[in-house]
Length: 343
Image 1 (cartoon, rainbow, N blue to C red):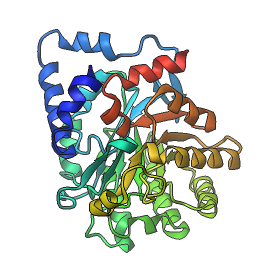
Image 2: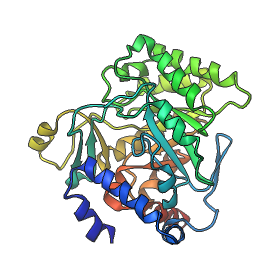
Image 3: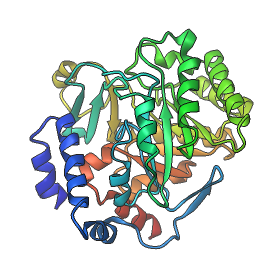
Image 4: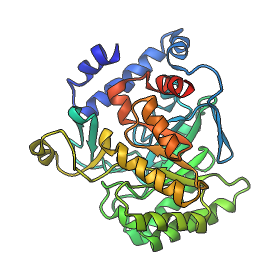
């Protein structure tokens, strides 16, 4: 039903408008008495045979919602009814920021892809904390993806990450350090060895000073060289963080079916969806092999079917995340992936 009726309707609107319409409708439907049980019947994967223990956490299934879908934690309660084993909220920054001017989100239907240059638009970490205080969905792991404000110079970035870490610590199950978005000027410079080691080391000092430290993961770009990936493995070992999320969006525009004229008109932004699938898998495989399979990895990038998810797991990932696949495949994707993995 999604592909034949709902998606054509949503694609009449701009991507950002369609996103808000979808989430508003979901909340309205779930507020109708009895609809939550219907959603569980339609979308929740059956059984606990896909449950996974990782980072000391218990995931009911290996399919998560990637960061960026619910930046402000306004929708994780509703999204939990779609069967996700875990939901990552953010990226959130210390202070609210509006992000880049609209339009800033674009569909590439021929490529089953999106280009975004959202720019960490969010209402700030304090607003997110207030929503999390109201409670989390049962049996769904919640991750907090943290970043820095655009106006914060890289030399002071550690302060922004520390502020978000401390504010969110009581309310999330794991953290993701985002230094790989291409839409905040200069942010990817923090992926370089020296500043990244300093940043992750600082967060780990804060983490181990608590009574119950939480997993910290690093989200990396697909555009890193092998040498940079080697540095990432070394930094993870040195700082003893829990693992990697591979990968964020790409700035590469090669091999797209969409016309170059349209791509040029869209301009800058991170590309997600099917065009990043192969590169994300390559990065996962490289990291896994170089670390002798000892580096826990969450895969994201071009996952729109059980086959795509299995490819990432075979490459060395332990869990997977989706975002763009939801836009093109609809809300039944989580259950279809879980059923396919079972088979």
